Length: 307
Image (cartoon, rainbow, N blue to C red; front, side):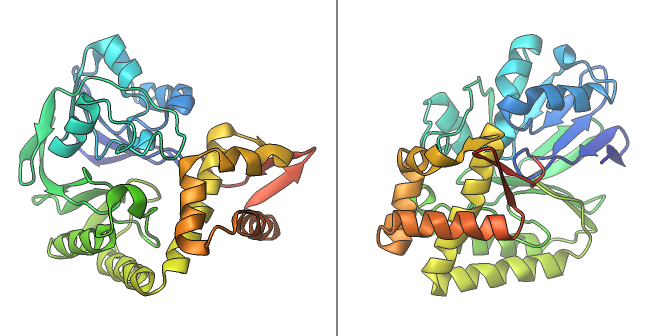
């Protein structure tokens, strides 16, 4: 997908399931919102420089939260440019204290690098993105430090992972806590109160059917509140695909053993499926193969999901 100019000199770049979407304010002192995953940084650089933006001149990175698919390019860009990085105050605390658990990196065995966060954002702050102003809305649930950015003037919402068009992001109760679903529901209700013309999500295409998307997300939350196994299967499916995407390809004969070495896989199956590790692994993998989400070739598993 080509970059879309959503406001004067502010561009939206769509990525995929693994890498978060980018926003680039093109100027002599560029501003970036989210920098995707570190292992795909070459593609990130290609996309951003394709807009005529030199990464060594970046003045500011704003992150919508500190999960690895949103902050992966931060350290590299900061080392080149000396730029500032702004996060919600909770995310700044995680980065300042080098907390690789609350950021999900260690829990999900993800690749990411710490960086310097220069400013803590608060709910209700108004921040400039070049010529444009956005209000910071704290939207915990998926991530404790999650924020959305709202332009009241233009009726634009940069929703990050709080609102997608047709789905919910992974809900990780073991890190975010037992009230995470309730927090996410409350965050969606905050977004529901806004006058929004178009949403630019953290993953996926822009969309205008805002109320429908919110109703879909709230419906899924209610379902998960009443059916913990459905929540567990959603997590298993999403993180297994995410893991294959991170590694590009995995050895099928060794994949189960590798998953068993992570925190997330064992805890998820213990929490939702009474420790039935092999049964849930094979159920998930076979379902993906049947639906062509995963492919098998020469002992390797790959995914057909866009990174």
